Amino acid sequence: MPVKIRLARHGKKHQAYYHIVVADGRAPRDGKFIEVIGKYNPNTNPATIHIDDVKALEWLSKGAQPTDTTKAILSYKGIMYKRHLQNGVAKIGRAHV
Image (tube, rainbow, N blue to C red; front, side):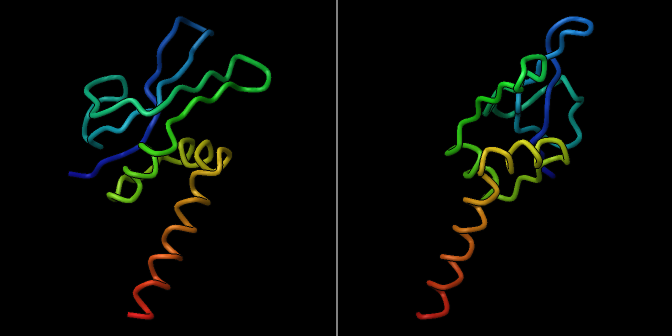
């Protein structure tokens, strides 16, 4: 089951906002999801992003794949960098065992 971190659209025409969700890759865009980990509103200037860092890192470590847009949002918030640092620390820990 490929798990994706992606955006689910909400709101009305020309006033969309998005929930950042963890979902099965086979589920429809706005359909069934596993967990909501954040919100993204591109209508404000600058765009408003609220995301639970701990949950996002947990899902990334479990192998969830972010879509291109979601990956850009996670990078902007520094979550991809935290994941990179965690992977580096894990590799160093295994090398000295």
